[in-house]
Length: 179
Image (tube, rainbow, N blue to C red; front, side, top):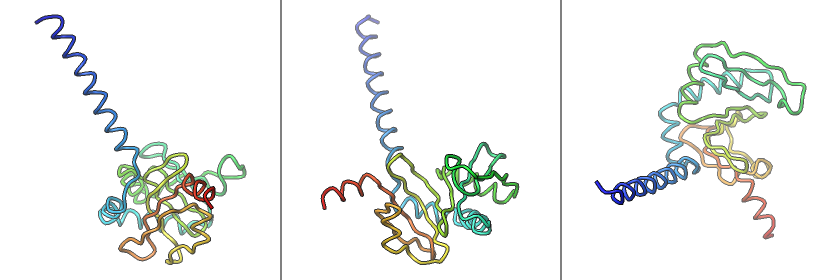
């Protein structure tokens, strides 16, 4: 084979690799849509309920689940580490651990409780995140709560109290500049 042929094949392979990498990067960084989240909720509903019940039963109203590995899952109880005063607690319940692992495998990397809301974040960036939120009172969030949490979209799932949501802080700031 000629040197030119090998060089051309090498360059073409690099271009194809770059294009495939770009497509995968864009696909993985996009926000999940309502349909994909609802399908996931229908398949793994029991795991969501197990984790919801576990977090709802805790006496702290601010909890963040930290997943160090499959067997080592902890919670920050109270405010975040940056605010100080929090305590850590190990999650030892095997059923809850199995559900957390299943949800993590399905892309829910950040799970937390904030007052009467439990968030299962599937896509997360600095300015936006989306996933499933459970409202412990069963009702959709009032407009003032939606605005406080920068929720741009809240759509009920097929089960009462559960909602697909999108938080987009950038959108809120852009909208406030246009008003």
